[in-house]
Amino acid sequence: MVIAAMGGDVDLVLRHLEAGGDPDLTLPGIPTALGFAAMQADLEMTEVLLRHGADANHVDEAGHTPVVYSVSASSVYCMAALLRFGADIHCQDRHGMRPCDYCRDDSPAAVEMRHLIAPPPVPAQDSSFGKGIRVHLRRKLQWFFEQPAFVG
Image (cartoon, rainbow, N blue to C red; front, side):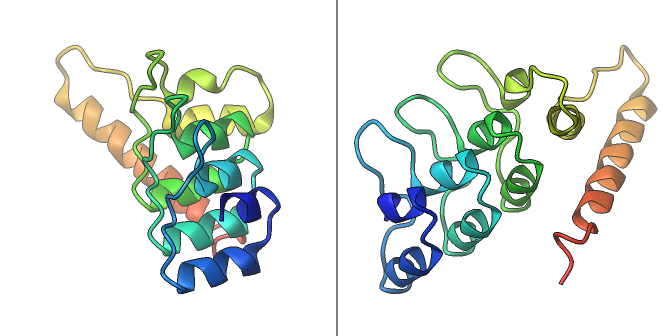
């Protein structure tokens, strides 16, 4: 299945999953099918795997999660799909880096990703500030998911 995901063969992956295949099955030293889908910015494959139970927080041998691969590919849509399925955006890999640490360039996608996944600033003592940040992030994510790629 990993090979089919690498090649973008959604039909073959679907047949494997519908026959009871493990969506998190992988080969030694390489990411899962979901990791490859995120790495290749393949939104359709990412969503198929997630709908069939792929672990959005699976840590591969390199210590990376699918979110890290979506960030590396500057795939805002794949990252958003992973977030919808419960991906942890604050987890650290074995090098101590979080997904937002991989958003290093200034491309529009990287800037948007940093806004979506960067941890909110910790206020000194004003608890209403933290609530305001949560409301802002919730509205931003709601707007993002209402975009044409996610509707219908």
